[in-house]
Structure formats: C-alpha cells, structure tokens
Length: 102
Length: 202
Image (cartoon, rainbow over all chains, first blue to last red):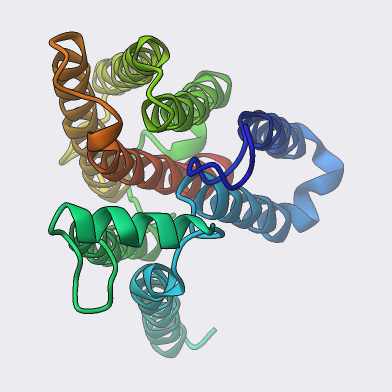
C-alpha cells in the first residue's frame, strides 16, 4: 500500500515500527538486569521509553502525517503534565532537604 | 494527496468539518487525550513523590515481577500493531481483515487485563493492599486507573467488532475506527511510561 493511500503509513512501516518497539523493550529489560548499567540505568531507561512513546505517537497515532493542530492539542497538555511532574518532584524533595538539612 | 487533505474532504462531505476544516470529532478527541495526559501526569507525580517512602513492606523490589510485566508490555505493543492494521483494513474497505484485526486487538487487551488481575491478586496474597503502605496506595491507583482505561478500550473495540459483524462498519465509518485507535494507542503509551517509571526504575 502506498504511503499516501489514506492509511497514513504502509503495512511494512507498521511492522517495522512494531519490531523496533519490541527490540527497545528487550533492551530495556536487558539493561535492568545487567549490573554494569546500574549507574546509568535511570537516564538510559528514560531515553528508551521516550523513543518508544514518540514512535507510537508519530506512526501509530499518525501525528507525523496529520495536521499540526492535533500535535498542538496533544503536545501542549503533555508538556504541561511533564512540568507538573518535574515541579512536584522539585517541591517535594526540596522540602524534604530543607527539613532534614541534607 | 496528503492524508489531512483527504480527511478534510471527508469531514466536509459528512458535515463534521470544524471552522478549521478539520474533523471536529477527531479534534475533540485529541483535546480529550490532552486532558488524559494531565490525569496520568498527576497520578505518576503522586507515585514518584511517595516513591521509597513506605515505612512497612512489601516493597517494590520484593514484589514486582519484571519478566511477567515485560510480557504484558509486549502484549500491549502487539495490540497497538493489530489496531493500526485494523484501521488500515477498514480504510481500504477490506472488512474481513478489519474484523479479524479488531478482534485480535480486543483479545490482546483482554490478555493484558487477565495479567493485571493475576498480578493484583498475587500482590494481595503477598500482603500488599490499597491501604497497606504508600507504595500500595499509589501503585494500585495508578495501574488500576490505567487498567480501567484498558477495560473501556476493550468494550469499545468489541462494540466495533460486533458492528462490523452486523455489516454496520465500513470505509465510511473509518473515522470511528481511527478515534478508537487513538484511544487505544494512548492507553499503550501510558503503559510505556508506567512500565519504565514503576517497574524498571525501582
């Protein structure tokens, strides 16, 4: 099927994306069990998770092919949600540090 | 022709075009998904804020089963693949394939829910309940809310499948399948985040 036949992307693209998603998941689980990666576990897992998230949103939710206004409708609240997560963590752990003096 | 141009023409033809020329159902659904980002953002924040602050066990590293949850993640990723294949089939008018992939998506969703039921039952048997400790409270509320979304998605998919079996779903209703797909993929991306934040980063 053509990329422009109204189905957003070809079946081959969908299968390739699925294969990449499964591979990234296997890497995530592998990294979790390898002691050598413990020092960089959190950043590595966050980056891999962000790649999976982006692939699903861009290809399976078709934001790569759709009108940019949909990306704005999704991206705006997503950034706000990320800001809420980061702010709450800073506020909470900042308060704990102030209380304990560490 | 770009997809959004085709979609615009279809939206105008069916009386669903918004003032921007976009399909108003799809626009409303993206706005709904945006609001869902904030809901899950607040639940994930709560989990992270109370992470590692439980005074009594069971603690995450004692109870979380990574191989089992990895299978659930694989299952949900495959359900997303089945969903895009269902949408592609409906859009090209291949309703035989469309019915198969819609059913496979719902079935994989049911497998995920079965796994979550087993996991929750196992945790309760191990002594972790909603009020046992901060981990239990935040874990069950976060993953339970996600599970409730999966349940709604499975019911929605099965409803579409029954409509397809009765011949009431075709290329003219492709937008309905696409919106269902948006919901299902959103549930998948939320799980991608939960799998990393809750299960892998302990």
